[in-house]
Amino acid sequence: MHTIQLAVLAKVTDLKRYGYAAVLAPLVRDVHTLEQDGVFIESVGQNVKGTIFCVSADNLAAHGLGGFLESFRAEYACRFCMATSEQFQATEVRDEEFVQRTKASHDVHVQNALKNGSEFGVKHDCVLREALEYFHPITGFPPDILHDLLEGIVPIELALCIKEMIRLKFFTLEYLNQKITSFPYQHTDKVNRPKAIHKTFMTRGTIGGNGHENATLLRLLPLFVGNKVPEGNAAWAVLMELKEVVELALCPSFTDETIDYFVWKISDHRQTLQEVFPELRLRPKHHYVEHYPTLVKCFGPLVHVWTMRFEAKHRFFKRVVHDAQNFKNILKTLATRHQHMMAYHLHAPSFFRPKTQTARVESVLVSALPEVAQAHIRGQTTSDTVYHTANVTIDGTDYTNGMFVSVGVSGGLSKFCKLAQIYLVNNNVSFLCCDFDSWYVEHLRSYELSATQTSLSIHLQSEFNDTVPLSAYKVDGVLLLTPKRFIQVKQS
Image (cartoon, rainbow, N blue to C red; front, side, top):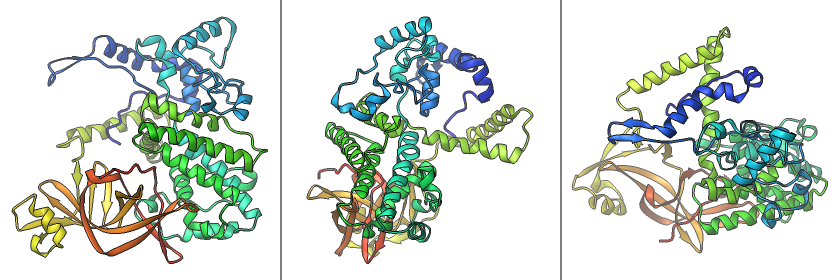
C-alpha cells in the first residue's frame, strides 16, 4: 500500500460547490508539465515524459469526472456505447447493434451538449481532456470489477437465487447461515470469510457485504449447500454461471480464445437469468459487464485497473480519522499523517519489499530429503544442506504448506498438487508437492481431488498455471477445491 502515492484530498461538499476543475487544478498542472517537458531522470540521463493512462473509479465518479450524466436511470447510462436503458433489457452487446462511443463522436456530443444541454448521456467535457493532450474520456475510464460485479450484481443475484431456493425448501436461511459461520475456513479465506446473511435480505433485494466477502460467498456456496440443491435447478444454474463470469473477470491474462469464451459465458449467464427471472429488470451494471471482453482488449486484464487496491489504501485514512478524532482541518491531518508514513518508508533501506520473503527458516540435509527433491536440489547447488520453511511470500503472494496450486494439465483440465515442503536454494524457491488426481464437478463448478499413491513432484513458481494458491475442503467425505479465478493451463 505504501507504493500508492497521495495526489489530492478534497471534501465532497467542496467538490460539488467548486467542481472538478478547481479541485484537480494543481494535479492537472503538474501532469501537463510532465506531458510537455517531462522530468529529468539521472539514471537514464534524459527527460522522461508521461501522462495519465486511465482513471480507476466507480461508475458514479467516472461519469462525474468524465462529463457523463451521473444518473443511472437516465436514458443513456452507458459511457461505452449509446444504447438506451430500454435497449439494455432486450439486446446483448455481443449482438453488435449498439453504436460504440468513439473519440470523434464524443467530441461532437460535448460541443452539442455545451450549446443545447446533455446529448446521448454527455453533459460537458472532461477536465482531464481539456487540460491534457493525450487523455480522452472514451479511452480513459475502464470499468470496475469491484463495484460492477462483487458489490453490484453478485449480492443482488445471490439474494434473488437464495430466496428462490429457500422458497423451494432446498434449505433454510438458518441452515445456510450455520454453514457460513461454522465452515472451517483456511488461509486467505479466513480473512475474507463472509458474514451471515441478514433476515431482511429478501425485502432489501441484496445480501449486502463487501467485495471480498461476496466473492468468497459465491465461490464457496457450492461447498456450503451444493449437496442440498438438485442438479438442473434453474436458480442454481444462474449462480453457477455468475460464478464463472466472476472467475473470468478476475483472470490476470487473456488469450483470444479466453476472450471469446468470456463473451459466451456472459451471454449464457444473461439468458439463464432472464429465463429464470423474467420479471427482473436488468441493472446498468449487467450491461457494463457485457462490454468487458472488448474492454479487455483496450485496457488489458481488468483486474489490473480495478479500485480494490485503492479501497485498501483508504483504510489508512479511515484509521487516522478514527484515531485522531480531530475534524478542524481533517484534510491537513490526513495529508500530514500520510506523508509521515511515506517518509518512514522512504527512509527504510529498501522502499520496495524483497521479491522473496520468509519469517523462519531451518537447515536440512539434502540426503534426508525425498529422492525427487534431492535430484532437483543437486542440479542447483553442491551444498550438503539447504534451507526449508513452512511459508514464503513471493511478489506479495503467500504460500504455506497445506495449500494447493495448479500445475500441469490432464485431459484438458488443470491438475492440482498440495504444498508439502518449501526449499530455498540459491535465492530460488522450490516447492515439494503431493500430486492429486482431479475431476471437474459441473454441478458445483469445483474440482474433486484424490491423492495419488505416494506421488511427489517438485516445481518452481514459474511452472504454476496460476500463481494464486488455493484451499481445499472436505465436504461429505470428498475433498473439493473451487478456484478463485479462471485458470489457463500451461501445456507441457
